[in-house]
Image (cartoon, rainbow, N blue to C red; front, side, top):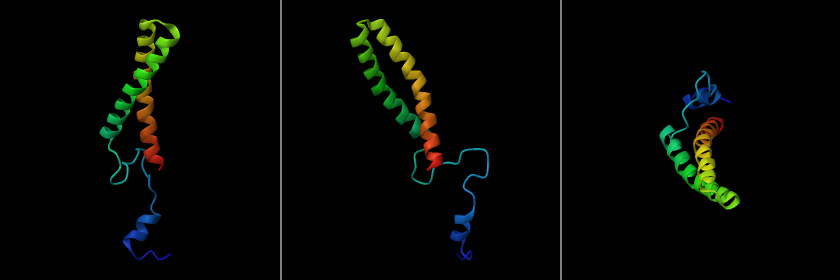
Length: 89
């Protein structure tokens, strides 16, 4: 392999030399796009979870409580997963 061109040099340099996660490659989603995607998915998933909880328990208060907890917990988990996935790929 010849290291005469800039492209060759970039190919052998480490991708993550610092402690911070690198930004996704050009054309990849930004942090705000990842957050918007996580938020919109959480709405769909939370409504589904609350509906299932209502069918099982027959109690609207319990269904809303389960949906509320699930919404806030899983939106953070999804965002972290999305950013880790982009960093690894």
